[in-house]
Structures are given as structure tokens and as C-alpha cells.
Length: 293
Ligand SMILES: [Zn+2]
Image (tube, rainbow, N blue to C red):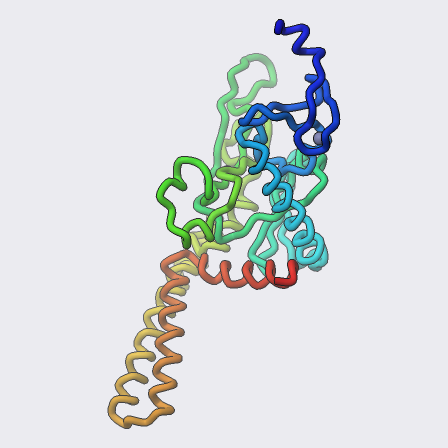
């Protein structure tokens, strides 16, 4: 079939069964088609053509659940409980520490049927990106675009090969990377990124990116360091209780020692994982509440 006849031939959407022309459909990995309308049930941050029909069906179910989660747990939060960073009018991040999740603000997400959230514990890393400007001329600055890349632990893609069940549980099922635009046509390589990066640093207890924050930390240590002291103190307390219970052979003392040990393990683990274990607990319980599981 030639290009033109292909252009005008209609194909059936594998999801709604409608006949659709070339301009309002996309070919999936297995050769089936998805129409423009059905694609609105997919995440704005995936490319459906990478996947096959069954996978996309599961993904749509996932998105329906995300929409419930968003409306029940995120939208209902007070504005003060959310940290919102928006740039160039339409792009940004909105964090909700209380539920350990965030939203990516992007015009392409507004066109979708379902809202979605991303979990803090699935963030692997984040950094500022700057795209050099290739066009020269009046008014052209050094960078065409500056923004933030958030790398997610992901169940698909090359990094997921050989993942354990536990690792998969702590990974996003579809998205490997999120790119959030912060400024266009600028000479500053981190233009407008400090607000959201600062909040991410706070979430993971990393050193502050602001002068004021850095000054404060030089006296008190970073949040991560403080957590380290706490983990050490908890471990000492636990060992003390254990020794006491051995000497007294008192059951109550032994129980207390056990509880203290647990506490030490938990704060130690939170320290090692930059708070991720804490956020897993929070996000798990929020999801269970929203979905009635
Ligand atoms: Zn369709």
C-alpha cells in the first residue's frame, strides 16, 4: 500500500472499536491502533507506541485509580499543605509532603481524562538540566531551556532488568524520567529551579541549595546528618535496654528492649534510604485509604 492510500485508510481502535484515520490514531508496538480519544486515558508522560494493547489496557486501569487518588487525597488538601512551583505559566511541580506524593504540572497533562500523582519513594535522583541554544541572533540567550530532570525508579526499561520484587514495589510502573521546564531563553543555567530543587533537597534531607539554608546547616548539620545522630542515639538506647533486660531478666524490660531495637532499625533504615522508607509507609497508607484496600 502506498503512502497516500495508507493515509486515507481507516483503522479500528483496539480500545473503543471506532474507525479512525491516520491523523487521529497511533500505532501500538503490537501493530494495533489507539485513537486520539482513547489516548486521553493514558498518562501524559508515557508514549503508548512503545507498548502493546494488553499493557495499555492495564495502564488505563492504573490511571483510573490514580484519578481517584488525586481527587480524594491531593485535591482535598489545604493550599498550605501543598508546595507549588510554577514556571512560564504552565510548567511545574506541586508537592504534598503530608501524603508523600507530587504532581507534575504540564499542559499535556491538562488534556488527559485522568489526573495522576508520583510517589516520593519512587524518586531515584534529580538534577538541573540546561539545553544550549543552537540559534544565534538578537535576543538569543545562552540556553534555550532550563529545567529539572527527576529520575524515577521504574519497573520498565534497562535499569529494571534483574529487579527484585521489593525493588519493583518501590518503582513507578511506567515512567523513568520527568522533565520539568523552569525557564526559556536564559543565560542562567539554573534559572527558576531553586524553589523546587530546594523542596526536593528538604524531602531527601540533602544539603540545602540556598545560602541561608547552608548557613543554618553549618550550625546544626543537614537534616540527613541530624537523622544520622538520631539513628546512632536510638541504637545506643536499644543496646542499653537490652543489657538491662539481660541483667534483670525482667520480661517487661525485654519487651522494651525489643521495641527500642525496632525503633533503632527503623530510624537507621530511614537514614540509609534518605527518608524513602518513611515515605513508603505514608504513601502506602494513603493509597490504601483512597482505594479502600
Ligand atoms: Zn479509541
